Amino acid sequence: MKTMKMALMAGAAIAVSAAAAHADDLSDMKAQLEALNARVASMETAPSVPAGYQLLAVSKGEALQVPGMMDSDRDRVTSERATIISVMPTADAPAGTTISWSGYVNAAVVYNGGDNQWTVKTRDVTGEFGSKFTLSSDTNDDWDVKARGQLRVVATTDTAVGEVGVELKMRGDFAGNGVADMYMKVAWGYWAMTPELTFGGGYAGSLGNIGYGYDGACSCYYTDNADVGFNPGDTTQLRLSYASGPFSMGIALEDSGIYGGYVGDGSSSNGNQLGVAGEIKYSGDMFSGEISAVYRTVDGDDYTGGSVLLADAVTAGFNSDVDGLWQVGAGLGFNLGDVASLSLAAAIGSGPFTEVNNYSGEITTSLPVKNDWWGISGLASANLSDAVHAEVGLGYKQRQTDGQSWALDGADAASLKSSGIDYTTWAVLGGIYYTPVDQLTIGLEGEWYTANYSTSTKALEDIDGTDVVEGDKISLDYEEDNWSVDLVSVWRF
Image 1 (cartoon, one colour):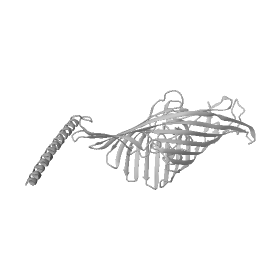
Image 2: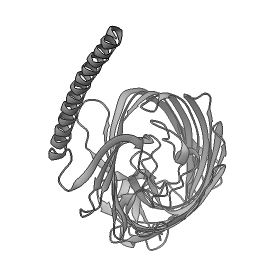
Image 3: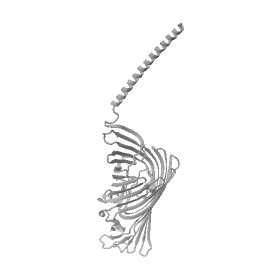
Image 4: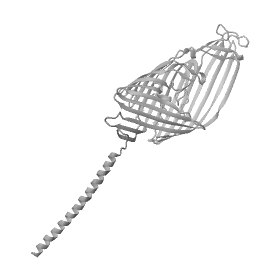
């Protein structure tokens, strides 16, 4: 009986102790819940985004692509990655916006060299050599440290009528001491009216530019200086484009005005003129291609004539017969998976003799001389490893002008006749690039190209006050070689 009494007392003590411990746990849990509720309430009363919005997200992702551009703006340097800022609205707020923010800085030590040779020959009326004069010169070695900075911003907004967005690409180029003048490489706005149809406009590359081959597909940070490209020059335009799967096409109304005039004199020429450009493109995994065309009207008042200085300070006038600029070209691309690729381009065209800066897309020179041209180029590239990429390109272009008959000052009939100019360019480039991460590239590049042109002029009559008689002929041959090597580094964000 005593033993049972002791057992009951012990059990009662244990139960009391357990009840007391459980009460303490409940008190602790209640205090923790009250603290958590207070913390949630404080977070809800302190907004972390602007009023009217639910979420502001900043992340690293794929750079936004602008519909309707169709790779008309050549820029192989820009990173495929970008900082993405996304703002998601509440149900009763305006549409949300996504901003893609990226850019790069590159710097390179660049060497340029070259030489040229002029040869002038005269023949008398019988065809015998009268004289031969040759002048050769070596271009002084040119060493530079050059740099560029670029910022690209793309902003898109989903609206009730479709996606609306803009792209801004700002650049500054440096070559030594002094500050750079910033210029807008691309200023573009667009409206994606449907998932396939896009209306856009602004300043960008022409649809007539061939985005394949030597000039269109190379990395080319500080090479690609030869006249073997098929770029009619960037310009302001309005564009309508269509894209469905791998197929796309577009047509653009372009401004044909040229700032630069004759021999880059800074004057404005070919004003109040328009042009049109179009492109059809297919982009597949193993094969891609395009057909592009451009036509730009010419202001006859800006291309009506000029003058040539002849022997003994005699000046002859001539007419240029420029009636417009046009080009038709095609490009093909072949991919062997992630191992190698081949890019080919070809084009024919006619119009005033123009030169385009391969880096800015600006028409730097426009001469009042009609010339016909054709060319072909190719670029082969290979991925030697996950981080090393190599490429080599070859290009050829021929220009030819029509012969001209010139009347000397005050003469009623032609006194001289030119055979026209034959102008050819051969070029080769190569580069090897090390990209350990997307934010950094180090490359070694080189380019060599040669340009040759020849022309001749024949006297159609005896020229008073000179030794020139009817049948005399003067010919000019010019040849130049150019080469460059650079070590470049590119830093991206």
